[in-house]
Length: 75
Image (cartoon, rainbow, N blue to C red; front, side, top):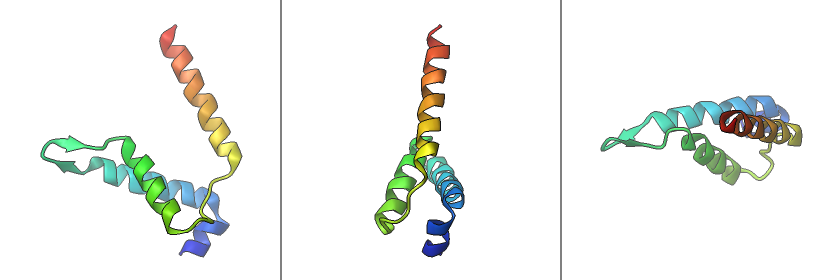
């Protein structure tokens, strides 16, 4: 399974997002991780194998969308 995710980084991205959504939806005493679940899922999966990485362009596009969203919300 790890080799499949190493060979297909888009599948890795969706696995991390799915695991993060599931982790973020878990409530313990009324508290949940929410969107931070994706961060913790990514950290956990990258700790399993150092070869698991997404392409740099995905990070750049994510940063650009984040910057756009902040600029749009600030007016």
